Each structure stands twice: as C-alpha cells, then as structure tokens.
Length: 398
Image 1 (spheres, rainbow, N blue to C red):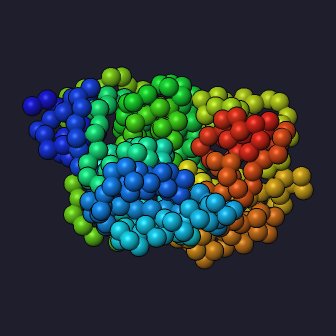
Image 2 (image 1 turned 180 degrees about the vertical axis):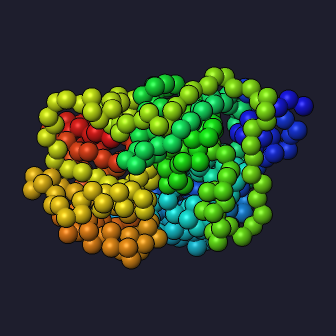
C-alpha cells in the first residue's frame, strides 16, 4: 500500500478503499453538506423537481445557512429565505439564520471534525481544512445530488506541501501568510490541488489564523487547504465536538507534486491591490498615496474574534478619519458577544465604526455597504475582482 497525504487518506476512508492516488475518480461518503441563501435555492429546486427526492440522506448532516442576504435586502431575498425555511421544516434539516456567517458558525457549532469529508455550495468551504478535514466547494446541482445520496464524486487531487518555518511577528496574521502564498504561486498556482500546511511554523498560528489561510486557499485555485491536527485543534474542539473523530497526518513517504517554503519570521504585512488576490505587495512597498473611502472588517475570512481585537487595539484612543466609513461585521453572534464582553465593540464604536449584523455584508456586492463608482475600499474580505463589492468602477484592496 502506497504512502498517502492527509487528503488522500480522508478520501480513501470515505470511498471505502485501502488507498487512492491522484487522478483517480471515486464516489465518497459525505459527513456534512450545506448551502447558503444564494446557492441553496437552486439546489432545492433540483432536489425537488429534477431528482424528485422525498427525503435527504441524513437531516442532521444537511444544513442551510442564511447569511448573504440577512437581514433580507428586498422582496426576492425575503421570498427565497421563506422557501428555505419551509424546506428545512419539511425535511427536518439544520437551519441557521441570524447567527452569523456559514464558515464561522459551522466550526463553532461543532459540525465539522478532523478526518471529515465536507462539501458546501460555496467556494470558501475550504475553511474547514483548518480542522484537519477535507472540505471543498461544489455547485448547487452537486449539492442536490449529495442531499439525496449522501455521496459525492471526486477526482483525487494532487497535493502541494507548504512548509511553514519560524514564528510570525506580532502584526502578522494568517491573512498575510495566505496572501503571500497566493502572490508567490498565483491565483491558478494550486488549481485542483490540495495545499497541505506543515512544518514547525504551524504551531505559531492560532486557529483564527488557520481558518483564514484555509478559507483563502481557494483563491490560489486549491481544491482544499488542510492543516495537521495538533494541541490547538484539540483545544478549539473541546466542548464543541461530542462525537468520536479520527485525525490524519501524512505518511513519511507521501508523494507531493511540489513543495513551497515560507519562513514566517521574515513575513511583513501584505496587501493585494486591485483587481486580484494575487496582485500582492508588502505594505511597505506601496509608495503611492491612495485615498480610501471605506474600510470593511469582517467576512468568512476575517470576521473572527482576533480580527476585531487587533482592530480595536489599533483604534483605541483614536478616531476614524471623517472621510472614511468603517464597517465592522462580526462573523457570528458568538464572536459579537465575546467582543462585547471584552470591550472591543465599545472601542470600535468610540472610534467611529458602524457595527453591522453578523452577515456577509458587502463582501460579494450584495448589500450593507456596496461601493459607488470611483470609490476605494480597504477590506479584510477575500476577493477584489472588478465589481466584487459594488460598482465595476470601484476598487478593493485586501
């Protein structure tokens, strides 16, 4: 039996095979499947009208998250949300509304464990790789099939090993790490491959850092972004997970298509200039003066507690520039409550921030802060494509 990577081991287990190899097609069982209020209505229609299914494979392992248009922005989104509530009631699946962003609340609620195979009708499903799970985004039609069958077809991906060494500095976060990697290999550098993060540098990354890194692995084209299981993973899951789980590590002689080396000790703060997450610079290399109209702190990438804490630490005793709108979107009610209890929200409000409901907000150009033509936003979100946050004539810096 050949040595395998973390991803290969998880896929092999769920395909009921002794081993798998890159390029092989398998049908794998799914531990958790979900969609959100943009993708789920399509999946729901296919499930009901084209497949004609009468039940889901396991109601406790299928979820709907209403987070992109929450609160509903118009009549159409309100109707969609109503239909999803009706579907959840009829099929007894899990429904989460008003408690936060899918990729923040799903780990918080203990719905994903190490060794799981997770699929979601959202590209940033890769987030759960931070928990040592194989997690990947799928389309709405595939989600409909998974809801009916409990299985998904996969082509086993190759794996890129990302060797992290050193320790990150005080002002370096997981966002700097993943932006640096995307800038290094490009937005297509990991197409249909797994980014497996390893090395002694992993220990210096908090769980919030890891969620951010796995979340944005897809911005390099990755099928998944997986971390090893360690004490920080165990500590995060304590009190959240009650079921048994099996963590995985790569075998000593596992085959990688290539390796990348990143010394965290040498990293400086990184930004991605318009209009690509791969258009990266160290912040000290950006010499031109850029007028900023809006700053967004939030999203499934950076709406966690540590993100708000860092922002509050910088803003304490200061005021937001009168020409700038600062919008803060806590990633979940849990994050919001903790930030309230610790005085972080008060600090941000005192500085002039607007605190929005835990939701996706303007990240995808939906509502609650979209940009006008010519405006520039600095944002902790994950994409800065043309038109991503509103007008096609606006610009976003990550």
